[in-house]
Picture 1 (cartoon, helix red, strand yellow):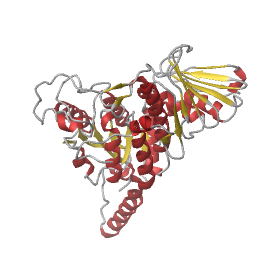
Picture 2 (cartoon, one colour):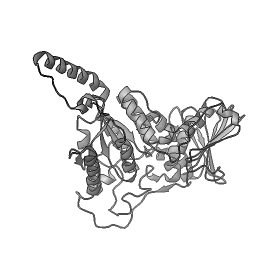
Picture 3 (cartoon, helix red, strand yellow):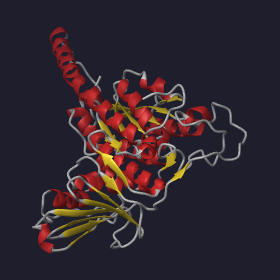
Picture 4 (tube, helix red, strand yellow):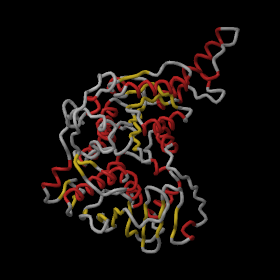
Length: 428
């Protein structure tokens, strides 16, 4: 049951209990301060109970951001690695001063718990969409790391599922909740730059490959490392420790997404926001001169490029209109074509792309049932643009995409890369 829907019932129950007790007994009822929400504690009715699925390197950082929120109660961890499970449990138990954090190897057991409101999904990219769909069907809200999908078909299913089930989904595109990036997107989206002409994204490497096998190694005991569960919906292959936590393992639906999908999940997402969170581009050219140019239905160009950036840190984006331009990066700084574009605005410069604000946005939306900045529809469209660009890279030629049918036009070869079969027994 969502945290917000529990609030009224529990509050009424507490008030009723105190009233009845006062009438029935001469002596006052003494309740712990944390139950009443005193001493900076959050009452149980206002807490969001969270479980973690796949808490590795990135997940540990995300979990730290959740730990910072006073209204979060972290209750359970699921991971295919025993060492990771025990590490997260130790951190949670130390934070809360108890031994209540439960451990699971199969995330479905965690999802079966009725007391968990939301889950943090920080597995490898191979699992993101499948786990998110399972979580939605189990009635959980979710903060899901990116890349959120492996292909175009998964992107469409993800958006449809969240809309149909009414679950709150926040993609781990935390730059949407950083002031300078938000301001840059606002300038483009609201016409302050004049008619928008070009948006630029940094792919951090433009290459598309297929994932494969490495030399077989002895498979660990299932309790230590559950290799079969790690593979999940991906095609089976023998155990090799280099593919465990492999940066490129099954990132893009048979295709390894490389920089286009990894950084594109962030940079293209910001470009999509700048053009108004519209459907993805309709045409993707073959790479040329270090760039890949895609074109939206309204004529705006989305340009993937690795060089030519103002040194503003990682994940740079640039938006150009007829009368002005803006560029921003992870340093927290923005550069404008004219100081007048600020119009007296004091834009906070927060470097290092922290996720704390994004996590807070997610938790607030869990309570209010409103849509977060990185909602499923926005994430799906940005990922579709990345997948289509990746297909153009892989085929090394132009592809055209129909945003009404969500298929490539007269291109059977490209359409075969829109989806992939999932290994039994997994379905989405």
